[in-house]
Picture (cartoon, rainbow, N blue to C red):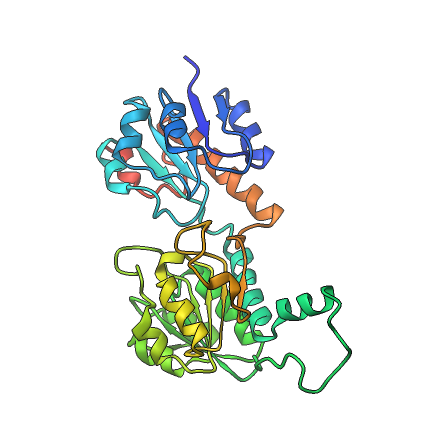
Length: 327
Ligand code: GLV
């Protein structure tokens, strides 16, 4: 019988075509908005594979709704905090993500937010668009220098490393904090490890977050951490919203505890904490870190490859729980 795949949103066509060419029966939930939970639980029923996005909570309830034939879930993201990996492993369901292919795009996005925030690009854009610009002035929209400043990177994985490379090219000093030391980064990029998070925060002019969201990193940056940052500092987040206590950040931005922030991710997407959108010292992006055509096509290709291989019982690249193939 033809295996069935549910895809929870419209995707780049290359991924859908690859699955079709492999002879799979595809059900794509159309458009840009996620299915409601009820709709999702209905659509996954009887599927052999699911291609999910970070907005879909994959837990016991969903696995039960899908049924015992479900073999693989390909998550269209590098982060997989939306998935209960233990529950999937218990049922022998393989789970994949999309590492590697979005590293450069996301690091570009973090660097872009850093520069845009430092140089107040969106405030300038609004001034010009609204017809309120009266011409060049020496004290107009003064930002902060990037070159010669210190960037503190929290989480020195692939994306943290790629951001460090960019920051070095902009003449920055780079510190990093990570669960373990990254000697390759230290040697190749002359970045310096700081064991204590508060020490890193207090020494940095810019701080950028690149950790996965886990119970340990939930609200890693809260009121106490914002308080030790420099008053002139800028906080960048392209990782996951809940790593920052967003309400505490709004307060810190309002009271000039830190100077500014650049955010691509939010605590309760797509909603924003009260007061955030009214602040002029924050650059906001709609979770578009990996949003280049090339990267999204590469992500679609990886998901299709994982589904096709796993349905054949083969271990595909990027399976997070490959032990399911030996059970
Ligand atoms: C996007 O946020 C991802 O994890 O790929």
